[in-house]
Image 1 (cartoon, rainbow, N blue to C red):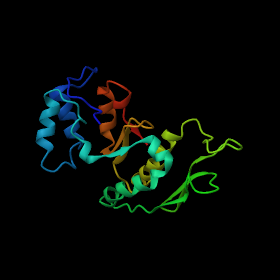
Image 2: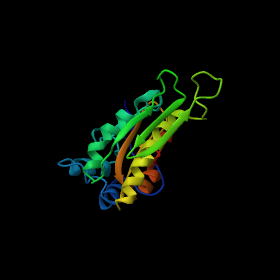
Image 3: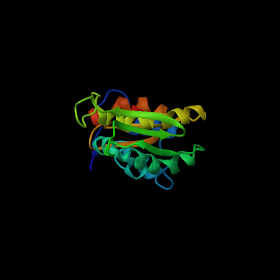
Length: 193
């Protein structure tokens, strides 16, 4: 999966060295031990800021999440949250494929999140406009609320939310506006869940 290709940014505003410096100043590479200089130089030379960040993030395939994999995703993210002092306790209350299921509900740190309900009389069809995006953003928003409550300046940011090739990262909030300024397509627009 390649979401970000190496190329010069053509967005108005920051480019090259100025973009690399702006991202560095707000802590964009704070979690990349031993890689910071190489990645900063890559962006300074015109590379996309996220092209080498895959090892820092999590795949968020909206279809897979809507099919019942939200708990698995949150368990994968839990160690990163724990490093920030936020425990993640997650469980599936009602799975989408359980016998007699009326929808999909999870519990995150004691809070119920109703991801979707099935349409009455409509079989197993979600009664929501976009269950893929809901199953991507709603659980991650719960984790972002915990980050905010803890006073963290970081949030889980999603690229390609609701699609098959989305990816999520924990990033410092100031990077969001910088990354939006260089986005060259819908998959490059960061969304704070």
